[in-house]
Length: 349
Ligand code: TXA
Ligand code: MG
Image 1 (cartoon, protein in one colour):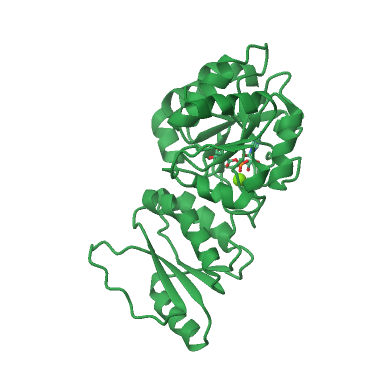
Image 2 (cartoon, rainbow, N blue to C red):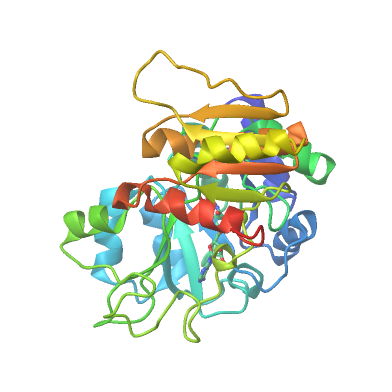
């Protein structure tokens, strides 16, 4: 183990905060079994204390310390998708701190697929030999509450800097948007319910397990949305989440040029985010200096990987508005469409 990882383990054992890379986004981690350490996460993020956090584990073998009444489907999903970007909501085990669950009877757990963080988790857990909930790191995305999740160590440094005791740099996050969240806590007979779309799609879950996934707002859903009265609280389901500072509007491809022309005619600065055309030679449209175009990969996975960095860059450019090309409505784009919808929320689009 590197000296830096040993230092990270030591800090975590001492109740400090360590920012770490995952395959989705960077997390702000603390010992999940230490309520005082978890309280520091909320203070650093400026996040309301009743929002639950995801517990990151070194492997499915640690699941029973954190969850109870684990249905066979949870083990199947763990086998199929862990380590990976899938968070399971399960009934919490006795002794899981309220600070982690937001006082709910459920807990969110996942095994992240990043080599550095897996090594850290294994070392942290190996040194944590108490009975009951142990070996887990509570880690929300390492951004201030309501802002865009960080996908590089530099993003974390810019946004949280001094509030974190150590930032582990594991490079740019390969997935780029937060994990899929699936609620398995509603007991036998209830379908698993999607609470947050991500790289692991309902189709992938059904293909791997043969089980249907209840989507928010689906007609066979007992609840009309993820925010129905019986649904757990998910801060990612708040509309104004994942937002850049700059107002963002989503526009159909055909309307982008007109929007750019209108902005430059009115002397307004604008950043346009577009999907890269399939052909490798780009014909950059002639636009005024106050209109800047950023090209994102044309495939859903590439677009997701680049999206948050592009939004941060657009913010940093200080333009008055961001316009983003609307994405296809197909299932593979649904997680990106979800984040864009939230990013545009409150901007009149
Ligand atoms: O990809 C990810 O999931 C990243 C990386 C760092 O693992 N983490 C992340 O954490 O996105 P955070 O806290 O920003 O979002 C986690 C979401 C929140 O919306 C929270 O409300 C929800 O998970 N959550 C956690 N525990 C829950 C529970 N017991 N019931 C319902 N939702 C829960
Ligand atoms: Mg977050």
